[in-house]
Structures are given as structure tokens and as C-alpha cells.
Length: 274
Image 1 (cartoon, rainbow, N blue to C red):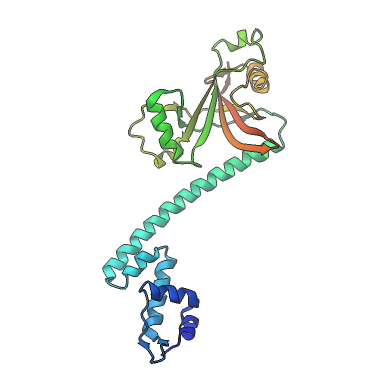
Image 2: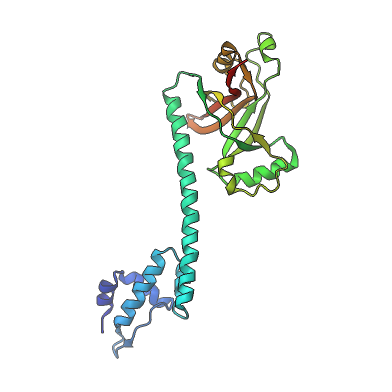
């Protein structure tokens, strides 16, 4: 027989943990002496080891407690299969979160060393929903918002079709019309039931001209703010296939001022010049 201290040493638990297990009925002493001392045996050690095994596999204590009453080998295998699937799903989510963290870090670090250089990058297909898109779009946004950080915040800036002809007549300080929404890449579409696509706008996988910028007025950006991007598009004579698509990656708060990091892109036809 073992004392409380001896049991704890052999089972690798603290006296407080043992006391809790006894209080909830997970462990029962094999003997209580006339002086009130509790005694334990090897069965108790074996029980504790199996309970620790169950807990180490991620099972909550209330589930492990059921193992005290009934647990066939078939049921044990079934529990392991369930837990295996849960962990595989969790690992998939963590991989997606890791990818988003790397993407956000990449763009943030890029901005720290940026001089508003316009780059050419491949585009990824996705689905977007905007707050001004009606009830269907708002329902999609509510669903997408549950998927952060696997979705990104989108702000689009509308360009007139004849922007090359009219841009000189526009007041460079005047803001472009903007739309706020959420974007989900198609490669992550498995996270969301897309059987109902009403309210979603598809974004094709097209190459794009990109630039990063930092602003404290994301809904009031105008021609001046996007000058490097539009100048490169005009200089290269690219055929534009979208408005200015903004993805918000970072928010900086200092001295009562909030600034946002935006990755802005314009889709172009495989970077072929017009």
C-alpha cells in the first residue's frame, strides 16, 4: 500500500491534483485507516496513468471520468479515432493560421522597408462580400467574420472606366468611392459552405500591379494616394481588369492616432500591355 505522498511520486502528480481527483470521484482510496489516513495500491497508480493518458490526448476531465464506469476496447478505439480527427482538423486550421501570419508579417515587414515601390505579383482567386451589397452580402460577411484570421479585410476603391482621360481633371485630394468588405481566398474555400453564393463576388486569379501604403484615412484615399500605382499602370500601358483592390493587414495605434497598412492591387490581363 502507498501513502498519499508515495502515490503522487509514483503517478507523477501533485498532492493538489490527487485531492481534486478524489473529490470528484476519479480516484478512491483502497483503505482508510482508523486515524483517517488514506492508503492506495498499484490499481490506483494504474488508473491515474490511464487518466493522464486520456488527458494528454486532449480529452476533457469530464470525459476521462466516464472511463471509470465503462470503457470497452471497441469504445476506446472509437474515442481515439474521434480525437484523431479532431486533431487533424485542428492542425489544418493551425496551418492556415500560420500561412496567414506569415503573409501578414511579410507585407508588414515589406512596408517597413518600402518606398512605395510598385511590384508585379501573381493573383489568387477568391470570394468577396461587401457591406453595401445588400442583405445577402451582409449574411455572407457575418459567416466570413467567423473565419478570422483566414479571411482578410477588403477595401475597394472605384476607378472610372475612362480614368486615363479624366484623371487630370479630377481633384487629386478628392477621395475615390470606397467599399468595405471581407475576402476569402478560393484555396481556403473549404472553410465555408459555398453552396449558397448569393451576395458573393468572385475575384479571378489574375496577375496584378501592387503597392503598399500606410494611411490614417482608409475611406478617404484619392488619386494622390494611388499615384505610384496608377503611374506604373499608365506608363506600362496595362489593360486594367479591376478597381483598386485593397487588403488591410495591420493597424498601428500611437498617440491617439490610428494608421492602417493596405496592400493595394489592380488586376491586369496577365501583365500584357494594352
